[in-house]
Length: 404
Image (cartoon, one colour):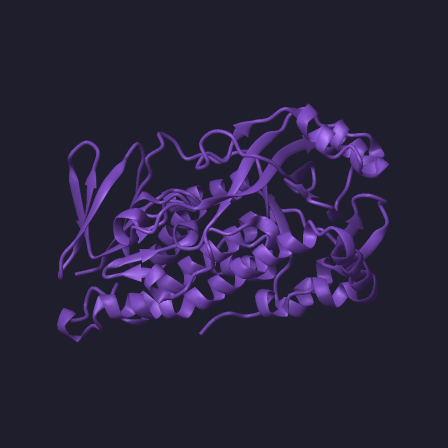
């Protein structure tokens, strides 16, 4: 019998897993508690590693219609506005890594995944489906839904986000903790900005206890801006789309240079995301338990300071599909007695993924310290960036091939 996969969570990771495993031969049933598939208005950066994975899922042509392809990554001082370092992207990145460095609206990528899944007869998308419990047996795994119905499959993918309830049932290791960093997010049409503030590059402005990132999305027509400052979080930490007061942000960045102040001052509407985090992964046990694979933020929530949260979830999805397909889990004509045990394959997935994800988590935490440095550490950072910016900004270990 062809393997049936259950997926909980209709975010980027869950959708990518559904597409990757459906293409590999699984019968997939995805359960999302929201009443519709939607994403908040925010941009994401897709390094060449993420773009290669998405190309492998058949999305190359569709992505080409909506991504922006910045030519450079620029690092500037938030206080003086001076250039600290830069890295060529564009054709240089594509030649080196086999795929471009792209930027995209989250909703556009999310929509492409949903559209691709709705064209597949082997994928069932279930909205308004709140999963309250997971039950495992030696032969299957079941989900208990809030309406008291139960569904059963061969394997479960827990992709229900950084505050994953399924993780709590399986690992009971608490919730992500607040970092004291507040991310203000905004998107604005480039045509609505004064000409000097428009940009088709990725720019990072580094200041003491703050930094700002800006880059184009929606084929360059919009500008995404994220400003991260230190402060006390308010409200539900699991909600990453709070309303925000533009004046609070302007006060926090009042000492920054005129061009950055002008950009922040030109945007009136911001959303607030209090950043929370877990320590980096410590072992494969945090990626797979029995017949359950944890994927994306449910396994390894990470700070956005390496721009790899979505990329790691997509890599997880591709790796999981590859390993299960190689083990003949999805083959309808393979005798079950001659298939590798499913828990063994999931442990292979966990072993292949946890160290890379832990490294990205740790690098993102370290980047936060570097970005927000003060005193002599800030002076040393700026000097190192001016002397060796290109080599410090490029990430061959991250953007290069990760296949096993």
